Image 1 (spheres, rainbow, N blue to C red):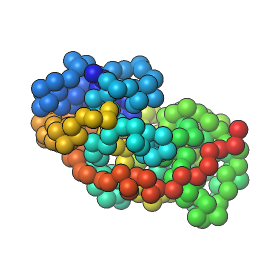
Image 2: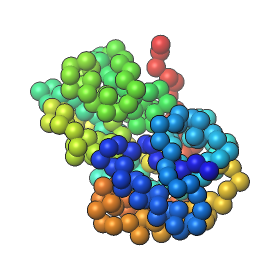
Image 3: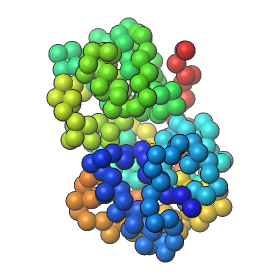
Image 4: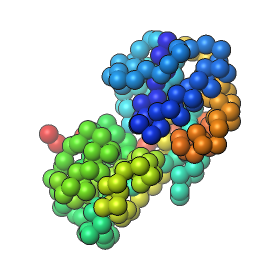
Amino acid sequence: MIAHLGMYDREETAAANDRFWAAIRNRLGAGPDHLTRDADFWDVWQSPDLLFSQTCGMPYRTRLHGKVALIGTPDYGLPGCPPGHYASVFVARREDAGSLDQFSGRRFAYNEALSQSGWAAPTTHMREKSIAFGDLVPTGGHLLSAKAVAEGLADFAALDGLTWEMIRRYDGLAADLVEIERTKPTPTLPFITALGRDTDRLFSAIAEAISDLAPDDKETLHLKGMIRIPAEEYLAVPTPEPPAT
């Protein structure tokens, strides 16, 4: 079986993620001894051996719905968001602080075309405001998008709200960046498992594991609890076309 928590796993959170999985495994009474790391996310998500993982809302609604089972949604207690939701945060260099419309036609860094927070949400948000992207700068990751802006390779980017909280906590480049706007909240990254597994049992084990965590680990992972968001709410989020290549 595979357990995987790659979406917010970084050096500063890895030990807390290990303890989170250990608490889940203890509640389940089964599962692998360790989290899978350094594996291709798509291979993990689509494996029949998947017990527990987390995906992004856009991959879930565009490719994984019907191929994986939805367990539930973590609540990260993010500012300005209902429980179980998050927003994309537009950032720019501190000396470029201003309103989002001032960035029309300027270089935009995005992590990847199948990202809800890095591509879909900011694209939808900007279109609603009749603001156009300039050149598009693909980076391969939210932190890399933030670095591209800080280093002047792009003018602005949209980051996952929780990733932005972690960048502000752990990365010195945050001092060079400023938040300029946020998108409307959408359901945050759901926990998933392979089809045929007992999602109610997994939901209960995860919820109880969050309660079992030490306060420091809860703070590190920003975990407040678990809620149920129907698949239909994920599927209803707008999906813009991918960036031109």
